[in-house]
Image (cartoon, rainbow, N blue to C red; front, side):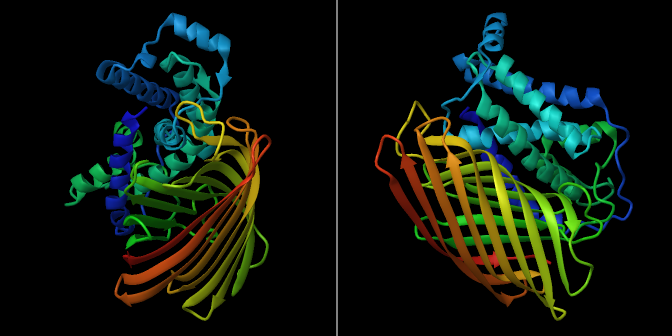
Length: 438
């Protein structure tokens, strides 16, 4: 599905251009909820996504694997689902994006987070069985459903936040174009239903930072967005608090180098409100790293203990410790290549550690660590252990500008049944300018 690469470039460019607009969106105390959920609106949107995708591939690209009919449908239904051998970008990013379109159709049609999930799974299953004449892919079904839910909820909320409710607003056209770029299907459904979409009861706290810098190789541009606060009393629904990170750079594997989403699904307070607070949270994570020498992606859930401590009125320390279950992960491999696949995929487990010192709501020092284990189900016969460590520091300069840098190390230990174990180290040293609008 190479045509997705063009769509991804445009899609993520819109996110970068629209991120600061979301932060400057006016406070809206009269946010409304959409009317009752409409199954037919949601189903029609899912069907339209698959039809437009199929029409483009068949009538414009003329790719033979989209030549479908009753014969291919019957064969796919008989053969069921298998692991596929598509390239990393298509499987780990293109399919989750397609899933986000299904998800936004359901969300904008009045469904909540959990009730939108079946529409994503149904959209993915029907595409795999009836949209292609090749055997349906199990990993595509998983990545599309869970990755599409994560990307879809983030883009739905940002699109609703950016979109203007007042046609007399002088920025109406620009804001609506930005909202449509983030969530084309969801925004179209919103226009049809005459609603601004379902949002939190109150406007969430949010902070975006844009990074422009140069690591040891190529220059990069990154957007980091923190939406809501896990400790907010009003943040009771899935993704009322989430972190989003996008990094773009040059390279042979595409311009999207990293995408990270961590969304709070549910929480339970462990201590009363005060100078120090703690809570237990359930999180959904979507991770994508496509570097020149290392690739990793995962759909995962984690249980975490979060701790927040106020140091006076301006400074704070935050700590998060996660135990993680990986539904499906993909990681670079040295063996077992087949067609376009040069990575292994399978389930796993791991843990995360996040520690930060913030002043005036902005992280000055942050340490992120992660350890994951993946057992390969497709590719080589192997078990992989990977660690990710990054220490970042930012020093404010003037106004919204800061100067910062980070040092990181990725280590992969791959233990093959029929080959010599491999240890890979991927160090990274970067410096950058940061703009954090208030």
